[in-house]
Picture 1 (cartoon, rainbow, N blue to C red):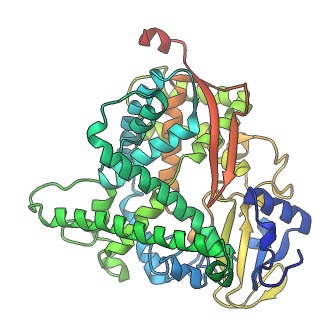
Picture 2 (picture 1 turned 180 degrees about the vertical axis):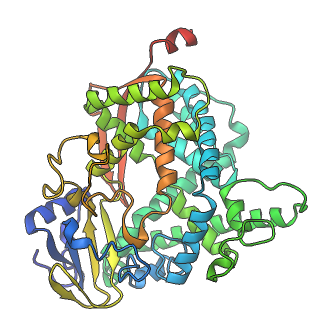
Picture 3 (picture 1 turned 90 degrees about the vertical axis):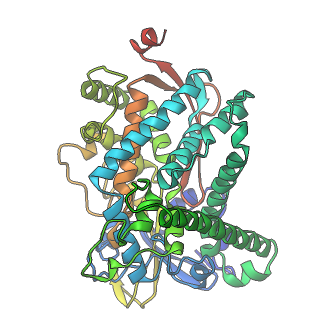
Length: 487
């Protein structure tokens, strides 16, 4: 598309930007360019074009997501995993994540935590009526689950939401301060996610001096400052607790404690022979915490698409009943989750149709050839995952929900399915995320018949930093056998 002076193609980016990206790719082809200010970005919508970009080897020319002054402004240059441009720091943090919380032992414990929090959620559902906005509940659930798993702090987001919609006091008055803090934290994390595209898409000159963009920038920078101070204080407080705990006393098994103690005498040792043997700094842990508190939309999209496809939904019920032998109350184990192959195929197909991250940024280190064209070092590429996921070159009937694509060893074209990204920057938490969704699917579907509410708009999604389910109206009814047990 033709760029305008100063703003480039910024005028095209409004509304649900995921749809804008998809339509631009459909109009201009599988490789085209846009300008964000004077910055040239290359869009790719074909799996064959991104083989080099998604090279998983340690010598990949595309180990960095994005570059520019905005990365420094957001304070992520040397922190976390998502946007970290310091490769030594990124590798260190990624190693800490994969070797401490992506282990089978941690995943087994995580399944137990999910069920414990689901039992609380289920209690609210049983007294709230059959019809509910599932998206609102599941975000509150994920907030409580993830923050507790990370810090062992109780946030009571589900209880607060129940109070709000029912005007009923669930005896949380003694936690009012904690409730306000957790609600503010979640809102500020969502604002931080939204600010990523603001800083990336809008040229610095415009967002620094042109109203109303300069006011938005000030708001986002203040939010980053608040999150830095608040989350770092949590890390420092826990570090002090650990230092004051006798060495013969068992420490909490939360993620925060694991990260603080890693590569110390009180924690696990990771790769002593290489550069990853140092402990993590407070700001590194803080950023990992910030990047971890997300989730909920994958489950919403999967349930929505299953409700539109009753044959697939019936097969999910069949699989869950077979695994649990119609026992709807026994505790769920990680071994049960591993057996849910058809359910996992449904989740993968949902992430193909509605990817959580429909676009990925990648930047080259040195000059390279992509699509038969030569590109200078530092060129930034956008991988349009949503377009690739619907590209008829790679998928037959891409508009149809067909979980069988992912069963029986069927061959999926390389780089045509990227629900968790690809290459060296593939999401290290993908197994944790899949375990989360499969466990919740088992807990919900073994107990309830799930249907979309037919009256009015039942589903709405919006792209912010990622695709987010804004509304999912469903009806939950106890399954046969569960009704008599409840009565």
